[in-house]
Amino acid sequence: MKSFVDYIAQTFNIDSNTSATLVITLSIFVLGYLLNWINNIIIGLRTRRNYRKLFQAITDSIIYSIDLQSKNFVKAAKTLNINYQNDYFLQTVTITHLDNVDRLDFKLVYDSYFLGLENLFSKRKLKAFNKSFGRLSLIKNTEERIPQELSNFIQKFNEHENKWNEAAEQIRQFYDNINRQVDGGTFPARVADYLTRMDRTIFRWQNLDRRTEYAILHNELINPLLTLNREFEDIGLTLNFNSLLLNASHHFDNMEKTLNVYNEIFRNHSLTYRAANRILKKSISIMKTPSIILFYFGTVKVITKPFRTIRRRRKWRRK
Image (tube, rainbow, N blue to C red; front, side, top):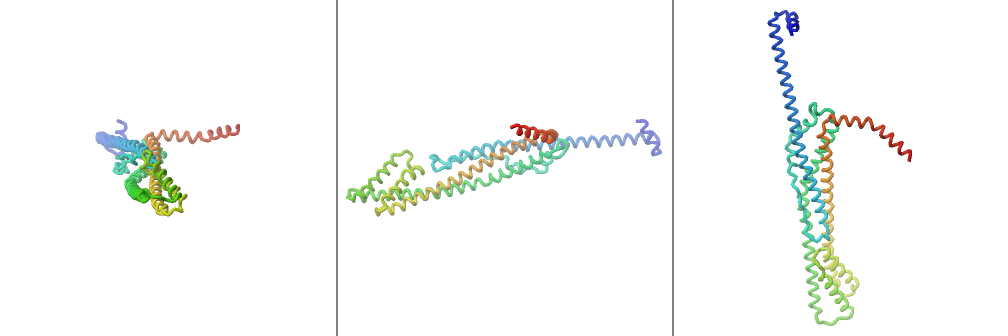
């Protein structure tokens, strides 16, 4: 220290006391600057670490929710079938933290993963980062579309269902009118045979459990009556009866098509959530791993890949 003070004194042609004062002042300034620089580094590390923890906590919650959402849509899709005999039901999960992603400062989130010494060699993290935000955007878009899709489904299905119910009521009234007209009357053998077989068809349907379910009513009453009417198409009353039966069958087909369309939509939503769950899990796992470890294993993988390829080829040749 003394030699350095003497060197300063000789270089700048000042006395030793002034030189010592200058050295001490500069040392204090440099030390203060270094301490402030280290403090800023520590603050930056803590800020980035806290932001990483916050983002990971939010995504962990989203991953859990979309896993439940995927299962809910699978269950709902199974009910959207014309043969299903209970109420159609969709239980959805509110993905609360999805909106919180938009409230995060994107720059701070980005810096927390790609700024600072702890984030060197972060090429793989960048790919995972982009994939995670891509999937989060896709999930948010899907969530925003679901309420309108449900509303459209309910509206379309109810419209076809009401027409189906009206058609079924018209068939009942037509049958009651026939019964009143033929009660106690005498008819040609062919007409009597037709009326008898029609009564048997209706009687068999009436003895079924849950006979008013869409598929049972259509398959066990309307279709058999249509088949019967085709066999006795020469009888005049089958013309109007067929018109009513075909009208009901048409509305049944529309209900079935609507259910099939939204069954496919719900299954696609389930696949979307399941894929997002898988990709987010993998991406967040990569982003949690220290960059130096990713760099090390990435380098080892690149170096050893040619040797693994040679071994596989030799094994293939032996076969």
